Amino acid sequence: MEQYSSKVMEHFAHPHNVGEIENADGVGTVGNPVCGDVMRLYIKVEGDVIADAKFKTFGCGAAIATSSMVTDLVKGKTINEALQVSNAAVAEALGGLPKVKMHCSVLAEEALKSALDDYYKKKGIPSPVKMSAESGHEHQAE
Amino acid sequence: MRKVYLDHAATTPVHPKVLEAMLPYFSGKFGNPSNLHDVGREAKDALEEARTKTAALINGKPEEIYFTASGAESNNFAIKGLAQANSQKGNHIIVSQIEHFSVLHPVKTLEKSGFKVTYLETDKTGLVDPADVEKAITRETVLVSIMHANNEIGTIQPIEEIGKITKEKGVLFHTDAVASVGWVPVDVKALGVDALSLSGHQFYGPKGAAALFVRKGVRIKPQIEGGIQEDGRRAGTENVPAIVGLGKAAELASAEIPHRMSYLSALRDRLQKGLTEKIDHLVINGHPTRRLPHNLNLSLWYVEGESMLLFLNMEGVSVSSGSACTSRSLKASHVLVCIGTDAAVANGTLLMSLGMGNTAKDIDYVIEKLPPIVQRLREMSPLYEDMIKQEKVR
Image 1 (cartoon, rainbow over the protein chains, first blue to last red):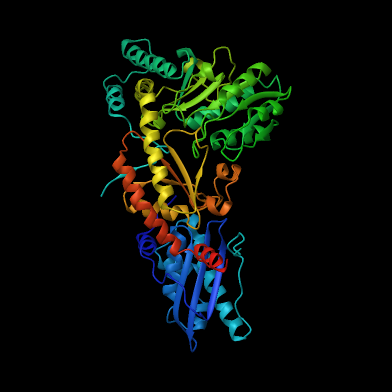
Image 2: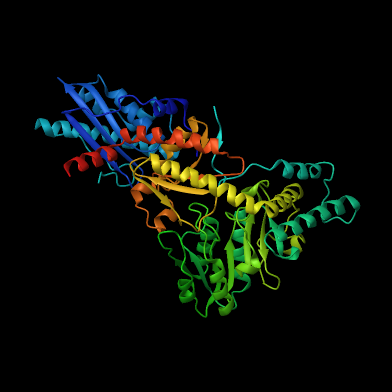
């Protein structure tokens, strides 16, 4: 396997935003333990800005690093801005990922979208989030 | 920082005495063994001495040893060579589901060319039932290949019993002993095998030298053609320095196996006990007693193998993981799947394989370092969170 970038190792060894948010405004869980990764992402929204984001992840080094990075990226963004955060942006911010680990960045994007989707549902607003299936294999939580 | 290498199943360091034996054959005694002059003769003598030592380690005859470049090559040679040379008898092959890919993939290739293959299941400890082998044998069966010890979970198969069955039925029997040779006694006569694979770097020899034992009188089709080397069965100028190293490693192992077994099983048991006492939700894979003395394969619930491996690496500890995330296929180890390990916990697997360079202090260091890593990752794991919440509900 290709080696991880120093940025990935930094976020893996010292991940940012680990934990839960009590009474979160949106929670999304994606992935499957059988595939080796499960991500749960919590967001706290104030006005239309993501005031806080936290995560819990079961997974490899890349899964933990992408979780850390995606929560970093969305904090302080508006909901609309957060909707634009892509897996490529997460991977790029980490200085790239080994090819076989790109699915971890996809999972991070899906976890974010799932949390945003949950936010809209809790608010009773029709959700503009389209849950993609681009990861190529089932990433539904059990 | 302490450095603890617990990945001897991946490869071992070259023993200093092995290196010393090899060095003259790179440049001073560089000859080609196929040449009749003195320079060639010198290399030829060294090659044959290595053959004698390798044969002695497994109680075979020197003329029954064919040198190859890797354990994978030996397995490919055995499977394809034996099946193809004996296909007039039939087209059925029997293997276990937990064989190394260097057995399973050539078997798949043969399947595509018309062979029929039976893939035997194992029990939860990884054992093949000899009765299943007997039942699977038909008049068409040409070859049975069951590994001596599994490279991941260390389970040692009842090869002797299977050997009796294949002998009685007149079926060729190959065993992949790459994981076991050098660590436990391996005797081709006692095991009753017709062919056996071994590899030098698995037991303190160099990479690039391995062997296939083929019992005298058994027909095998060469897979590398175009030269007279290895009795015409494997073309290519021999890797003399590496083969000399393999011979030396075999000689050292022959003298040291009982000591290796007692030393390593004591350390392994210490590691197993220490980790089991300190970490909950932990499963030991493989057979409780019929297991390689230096093997410890464990699965931990709610944590993923690669992240444990990376954190251990930061502490100077080298291990392997059996997790989906380190494989291209994103699938858990086929061995763990076969023994019925839950696919979710299979991704939290670590393979620790000890060696003679490890000490009790190394083991205690790992027992100290792993539990906080597991705890930290579990606190980060949504699966652990769910489990704790469910337990509270109860």
